[in-house]
Image 1 (spheres, rainbow, N blue to C red):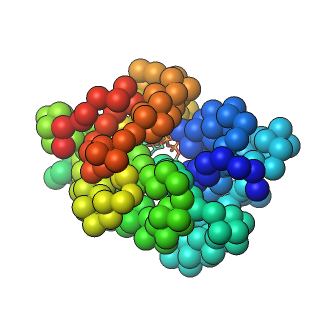
Image 2 (cartoon, rainbow, N blue to C red):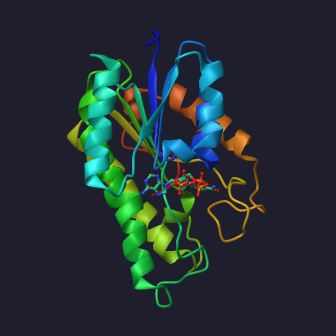
Length: 243
Ligand SMILES: NC(=O)c1ccc[n+]([C@@H]2O[C@H](COP(=O)([O-])OP(=O)(O)OC[C@H]3O[C@@H](n4cnc5c(N)ncnc54)[C@H](OP(=O)(O)O)[C@@H]3O)[C@@H](O)[C@H]2O)c1
């Protein structure tokens, strides 16, 4: 294990997670734990292993499966041998209802599934890994959220199931920050980024920014965090987002 800070990214096999891993590996002292549901099928992550020179580790993690989360936390603890996780980036999320669903029209099963992943899954991952975060130097938890979940932004009626889940995630951030002030915990919107190939997917091809631009911003914001930023909601430009 190399010196330097340790990052753990969930949902690291594609989209924003994969780009985050890719950009982090450009810093020679950083160790990246790339968590994804099926490392054996994560071909893009696997392609990064050789050039990472021992600084990239793939971890099997399904955030909705408690057993998988607990097992991953044990695996990471064994791997780190006493070191902690400096930055836990809760990136994994789903958008099964698309961004067109509404409060009265949405499939309630979509709402429940979205909530189980984006809120309960993220909450459990953080419970399982917070001991490792507390053992680290940077002690930082980043919940990747969305301005779609901001009431203050006053969006329209659409994107209901996803927006409800991200608003709840933001409250989770707030509660986590209040309970553990020694850990810097934030919500962070990466911007509308071109992930996925279909318009119905998370970012979609018509998104405003390439994924690389959003992730550059995300990393800049995370690296400039101060303890007093804990419990806040930022965007990838470092601006505060209204709840
Ligand atoms: N793209 C945007 O414009 C945008 C805007 C605002 C916020 N965000 C947020 O940014 C984050 C990443 O979005 P993205 O655009 O990169 O999405 P994406 O391309 O759809 O990727 C989502 C990632 O989450 C993983 N995932 C889903 N459910 C999981 C589970 N149960 N366990 C483990 N991993 C799981 C997926 O893994 P599989 O490959 O196994 O499905 C995939 O790696 C999300 O939190 C999203 O809400 C995105």
